[in-house]
Amino acid sequence: MVLSSPSRRRAKPRLARQRGAVAIMVGLSLAVLIGFVGLALDLGKLYVAKSEQQNSMDACALAAARDLTGATPLAVAEAAGITAGSINKMMFQKETTSLVADLSVQFSDAPDHAFYPKDSAIGAYPLDTIKYVKCSNQRSGIATWFIQVLNLLPQVNIGPSTVSSFAMATTASAQTACAIPIFVCKPDPASPYKIGQWLSSKFDASNPSQYGPGSFGWASLVEDNAKSLMEQLQGAGQCNLTGIEKVGTQGNVNSVPDYWNSRFGIAPPSGKRLGVPDFTGYAYNDTTWSAKENAYPDFVNKRKAYERYQGDAAMGWTNPNGTKGTPLSQEEYKSGADRRLMLAPVVDCAAFSGGKAPVTAWACLLMIEPMQNNGNNNAVRVEYRGISTSAGSPCATQGIPGSGTGAGPQVPMLVQ
Image (cartoon, rainbow, N blue to C red; front, side, top):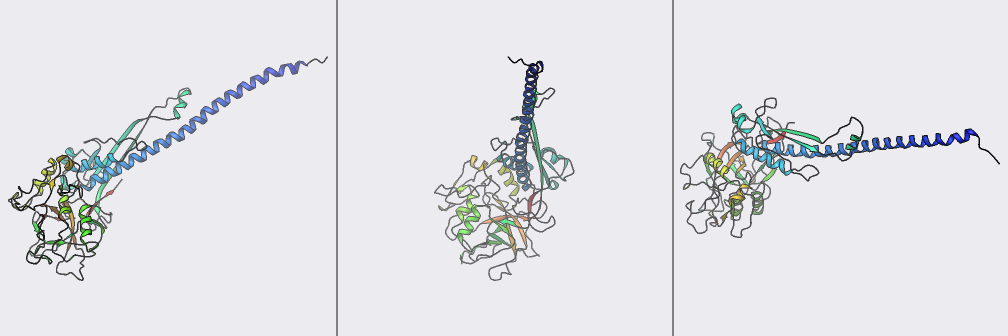
């Protein structure tokens, strides 16, 4: 019979105690490991939320800056910013970014001056000096996924997180521009165009295939065909322009009236919408506007009220052809865009060479009246609102930002 030694009998409790210590260490290590993994995942979640929120603020600031023309009400810029910012969602594209009027979008005359909501900004700075906009947003209550495990540790209390973002934008001269397919003749220095002057198209009733004595005509900015003109009227115009590629030679184009009129919110008989309307379709001619000039201030008021096109009869058009269309509902105008204030290249009409001419400036024009569908009789007028770089020009533009002192039209660009 073999007896165990006393030392061998005492080893068992020591081993049991060691096993218990290891279990505690493993448990604590797992908690810390899960905490660090959770920290990485939760910080990644916050990074994504912050990035999405910043995209929203960038879109808001750029959209609002586009309407800082010195003539357009700040309410228009604020609405554009909130709309663009809200389209860009956050929280993994599941949540609409919450932007609040008079809080999320603020304005100033310089990046280092105080920013105010639209109404207060008008009291602090003259409208034509307000060239900067700041969009800001804060999203609180973002719950964590794993890092809250660390709350099991003594004196640790980790709650929901908050992310904040802002963006500041202004306008600068563009390298390129977007324009509708018409050109404006450079005026005689002895009789320059006046702000508010109505310019007539170069239509020759006696010879419809040629230009008449008017002030502007159709410009085939890319291709010399009617389809190109229709597409440009339906969309944003022709963009990335640094000069006119080609100018058409016809005095009128019979296929474009419905596309021109779509910017007034006039749907053709087919009922098919050919493009996004402006915020108002209210039109001006000798019957509806006896002054025959400077309709822009009234146009701004009609935009605020989303006035519909008043109809051919109100325009004094008794011809049964008229516009051959029906105005959209007021709700459809509310979902419109900036579609009747437009850029057009200014060229020396006496210096065409091979159907081409260099751009000398960019004119800001207001489409005041739709076109009648009267065969060759497609004469129409626009209102001259000055050169696009002039102080107070109401034309909002698109393009690639260039030099701040360049001659191109003003386009939005981020500052911060």
